[in-house]
Image (cartoon, rainbow, N blue to C red; front, side, top):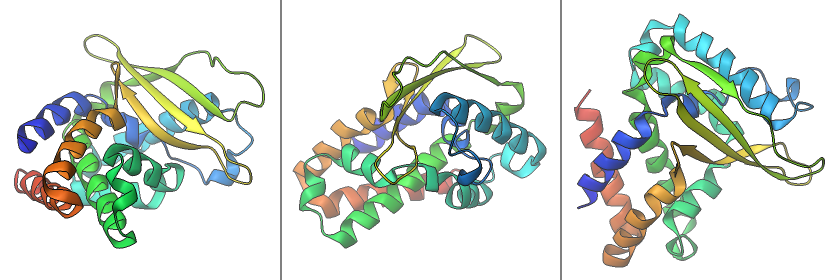
Length: 214
């Protein structure tokens, strides 16, 4: 059941490959004064250009994609919040070591999910829609559209800004499906059946299966 659920999520979210890769570019200090929509739009285009110029990433080289994610993208994601929300109430029962394992395996799952769709990145463009937010808002929705072959793909970002911290993305919507919610029911069922360690084992097995497909 877990494997089939992961396969469904993989097919759905793979269409949003650029979602994760569109979150990085220049050092954050260079864009801190930008509005969230300007930040997403400019960096989306910069990363698209970088991917187009790197045949290995464009071809879906998982090792290079993981390195890119670790070095540039993760600093701009509230990945702990994303993982905690995906795991649900079980997160609070997890030890710090288990929480770190969950973050590591969840990251691998997402990276390998997106890797398969990167070969089409050269045909895509990102259009950022007008931001619907008030000045001073600390939690905003940035709506974008991925255009290329076929129908446009809705791609939205939830960002929050805490006092003394930069804007960080904590959820991504692909064609009306929020990433965190996609996994929450699956993860919750696994935790209820086998506990936190059972969920970690399921993620490890799914990631090994994905790696073997390369």
